[in-house]
Image 1 (cartoon, chains in turn orange, red):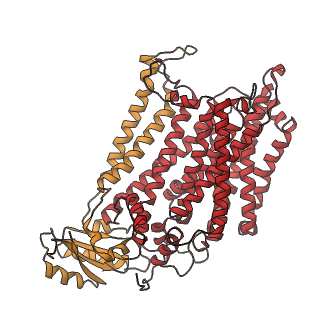
Image 2 (cartoon, rainbow over the protein chains, first blue to last red):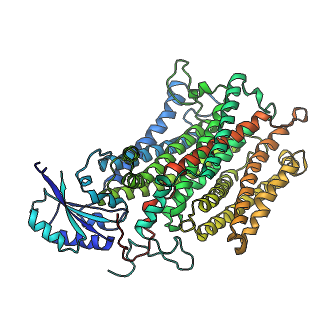
Image 3 (cartoon, rainbow over the protein chains, first blue to last red):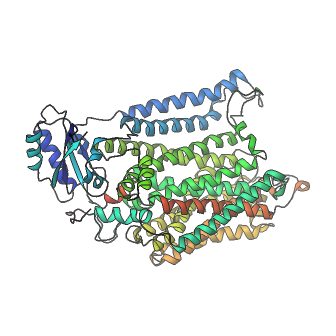
Amino acid sequence: MTKRPLYGLMAEFDNPDELLGAAHRARAAGYRRMDAFTPMPIEGLAEAVGFEKTRLPLAVFIGGLCGCIGGFLLQYYPSVIDYPLNVAGKPFNSWPAFVPVTFELTILAAALTTVFGMLAMNGLPTPYHPVFNVPQFELASRNRFFLCIKARDPQFDGEKTKQFLEGLKAHAVYEVES
Amino acid sequence: MNELSPNTAAHADPEHPVIGPGHSYASVTDKISAIVLTQPLSKGWMFGFTVSFGLLMVLMASLTYLLLEGTGIWGINVPVGWGFDIINFVWWIGIGHAGTLISAILLLLRQRWRTSINRFAEAMTIFAVCAAGIFPLIHTGRPWLAYWLLPYPDTMATWPQFRSPLVWDVFAVSTYATVSFLFWFVGMIPDLATLRDRARHRAIKIIYGILAMGWRGSAVHWHRYEMASLLLAGLATPLVVSVHTVVSFDFAVGVIPGWHTTVFPPYFVAGAIFSGFAMVMTLAIPVRAFYKLEDFITMRHLENMAKVMLATGLIVGYGYLMEAFMAFYTGNTYERFMIWNRFSGPYALVGGALLLCNIIIPQSLWFRRVRTNVPALFVISLIINIGMWLERFVIIVTSLHRDFLPSSWGMYSPTRWDVATYLGTIGLFLTMFYLFIRFLPMISIFEMRGLVPARPEIKQPA
């Protein structure tokens, strides 16, 4: 049976601090395309594997703004243009009364943008991903911490990278088939 | 590396731990996922589920009869046009608010003790909102036309009246239900991945796998995930305040003595949190004993919740006091009569019971001995649940039953169908809760891992 092409090499660690140290050293050694997998969020790890910053807050702001404007227009159009109704001589555009619905729709749109934006930016749902080919990877959602250097990293070299990872006090190093 | 790294528990308060001693990443994971994956169905669960499901069937029967006969089967009539349905709506939606408070506001305030109770408090929110949502819907009389509440260009060429709090309510409650569900589900994604990886049966693996959407715990994903949690918490915090504010507007915007007060929004929000924490406690105490979760839901959690109940209970007490004070201070005859009537009129017993349940009995929480006594807390939480229900009864019924003209005065008493519908929604709530604790991780596993003290992991076979 021919082996499938390599996706990368994965090192297993016992605790978050070792993984964080390893990620920093891999970056210092010049590796750029890597990812770490952990059972819980680890402060500083995303930066250590080379992630700059997320644009999620900007998306949420735009989403909320759309909800706000849309929510107000949703009330303005019927009340002023399509079906103006004189209630006790009050102005058609009685904007203070439109505040609650405008507010709720702002929150709704912003929340929907947050959730679907987060999922989309993370590329979820992902039905298939190579890292799951490593049998020990199921511990990534329990108590083990993994660092994966991808084969498409310009500095990647099957043997050298493997030695490098083993030198990081890794518990074990696995080959990840794509 | 310094001894207290930010990624491991730096918040250890040895005297009041938020997690029992001796836990590791693995033990936390295994203990919580075992409840779902490996523990057999217990007799207690089956019994509780059967009773709840029976009550749910009572709801189905009473709703069917309601659809056949109309709202005439209820006790409402002129002048008391809002009865059990609105009381129960406000009661349920208020209960839901504690879930959002725990998951959103305490997250923003970095209260780490919330970790073990936030998941099922959030679940409680969703189930309570489901139960709440039924009431305004069936109160419309023709629920099959409930979509008329939504703004859409219809063939009748009419629109909802956007100046009405009842329309605001539609938007507030539906937004609240949606956002609460999203918050709950997003919070569960990493734990669903854990269940997927821990499950041994292929079908179960596939089901949790689909729900987890391929979550693999990537550092970059976690980064966006945490940002999303923070944003959702920031959005849910004003939302939860706005929802009960809008609910209180349903009353405060009306010109009925007893409803038309500016103190309503803050004191409704405080009352919602008060009753919600009581319900969290009512659910948490049996669950923690039954599933042996004393390590995760510790005395510190119960004590903190008791303190929140005490504080919000005092705000509610202030609300009552201000209502009475303003009634006399304004010199308005109708307002004065309303307050007088509440505590000396035909419903005086309900008014007295309300003060006893909501104001007097919770004062015992000042004492540490009471706050650390689990059976006492359970009983007090039940009393507060009852008290907050009575509060809504007093606000709605006693304000309506004495109209401006004595010739229009009337009395309200619920019929058996009112009671059956109410009990039925308790069945709906508990049925969903029983299914939840059986099929989903009731404690946030990944957040619990963050509470595990810093020390080398004990090597264990997978």
